[in-house]
Length: 512
Image (cartoon, rainbow, N blue to C red; front, side, top):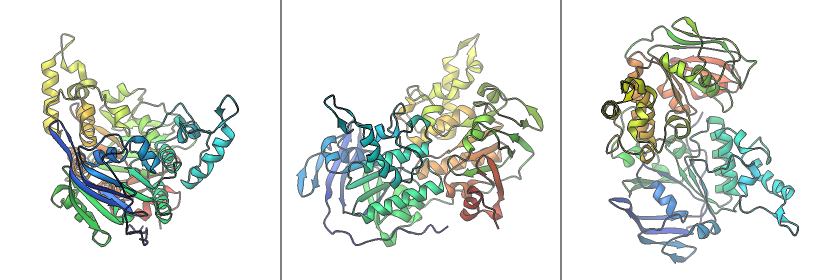
């Protein structure tokens, strides 16, 4: 598949409709944004990149009217402003598609898209559901959704919920749509659809700010790239200058070495095997899969192919609808996550904030929570042991925090993921299942996670890595298994790795 730019540039207006001049924001002890100047032209796609903490979120909050800058000015349609309000931002046509989904799961799709803007009818001002459905249908069609306006959001996958977010942004007649990590939960086919949506927005004269840690997507979509580092503008790349190494160098001040390393040992025996295992997603379609000691087995597939459901069965969260699970060649029953943990089988979940960590708890308690009996003295938890164990893992994984008493929710995405890893690494894992391990993590932290995964494999741990990032699957895996509609469609050895091969298997076709 060609990952060169396939969204052609078009002639755009030479007058920006939105300009920032010398904009800055300081919090106690932290300069979040320092003298940023930025012009946004109609019909232009701007790639905005930078490590976590570079100032991207602060800039987005200023454009959304959530916070006011301390200095600088904003020029909107020729009018100079000191700041935007949420109301003026929305009324000016600035819309957001956030990385962290901002939906009400107890409502249906239509109610979420037009929340607070529902069409009303009659003297009682009741919601006109028929009119609401009519308004939502073209928006869902535009984003390629296959669910209806009446579908409960709680029943949608992460990728489908992301489509609802995009439809909601399009519903306000946006002039600027800001996509914050929109593909972090999307596999290749859905990512292609999103990039097609951005192409259509550009053709309609709508501006786009595209924030992503997947730099190959930025290369494809951006007319120019704006790079932030430590709250300042590190540089701007014109269309002809955009490239992976150029972006990384501006982001972190250097070019990274190759992010993937070759295994230091040949794979060992089969650590964990699924034999004709059936999951809730596809109870009539058996899955056969072997995970070997000392290897990283990538598991690819489209949204809904059954990858996460398989991981949940292997970890004991969901029950199996048939088949057997074998560990070291012996049949086992994994009826709960507790039993999986006791056997050294650990899961790093896709949604770490919901299922992997407790955001309001300190780092130390998150790291030790799964192994408290070993830290107890006569059935009483030893605070000294807990702190010592957590500190050892903090140093081992390079978790950036003042201390292990720091609240976990204040950490960056990459450091939160390291806390999830630290919890399991302190317990001598045999099998590690990573479900979307670098979702929403910046390029520097990604490389650290890849390095940790490789060091675990080199130490003999069996690793199953589920990922929707094609570049990640190919770059990190020793073998790739591809799922299609609940079954393994094929397994690729390293010499056969390619985006085309993975995608063919993912859609149920054979690889020639």
